Length: 392
Image (cartoon, rainbow, N blue to C red):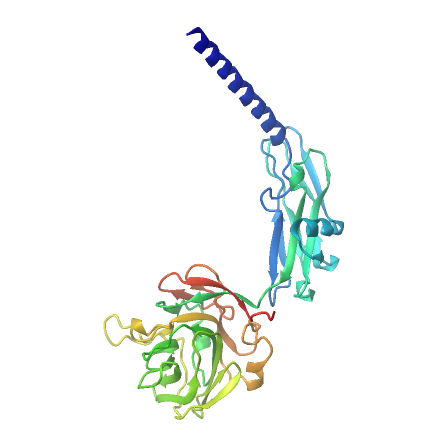
């Protein structure tokens, strides 16, 4: 028993010593200021069209309150670019001085607090940057009246070119309808252009709906014995199509349809190439902002939908992006304009709905033109892409 007792006494003393040593180390570590994000030294931002300004705010922290007021002053330090490149195997250059402003460089952790006042970096003139280059802005501590955790002294803000489209939505077995804030912009359209960037997995010999209102003005594939990949415009005054109004499946295609309600002429473009005009001349005014009276119980077919018409099997089996509605007829030159398939200015003349489908989560799709956001019946599946594909 004596030997056991001595052993346990030794073990308890050893554990106590170890615990005390750990506590002392923890106290030494805990007394240091965490100047930036301890787990994320690099913040990377993708340069996208229209992205010209943004602000980012951060704080310094300390694990436990102190009785002394702590001051930490930050600065931008382009001389640390090479340090970044060496650590992250990159070939970045310094972010130009005109592209940033450190509005309040000194953070204060007041006595009794563990979190500092905000430090804000304002980024600007970002559209002046070259998408083919990588830029980095090192932000580091210039002065501090308190000991720092050195690994957090410097943070890096990185900007680099992105593909115009980086995420899309899979709408197979999904349907989307606007929650209108201003339905009037989609009504009384005597001229209209409808666009969508789509990748259809399969277009069977069944109706696959792109968008519109059943029985009024609807863009759909197939019906009435047409091939599964042939587009048809179904209106209250009759239907129109053309044998050349077809798309390939399994690849991204840009579809644009122009329609003149005065003449009844419709024309389809695939990847900017005209596929000819329709073989019929229905003359109607498009009203996509109207909720038509239901004709029977549970009849949802009279509203505007994307990926749905009349019955649930008429979904579009595929991915979608850049869905737009214009209140004018775009010219062939406008449709073929550089990058038009992948982006347009939300303030463009005549653009009345612009659902980019780049939200990346959930089932609500932002309307960048007039705030008539789409709501899906179920959460969507989101996919990472790079469009247009970069040439190797």
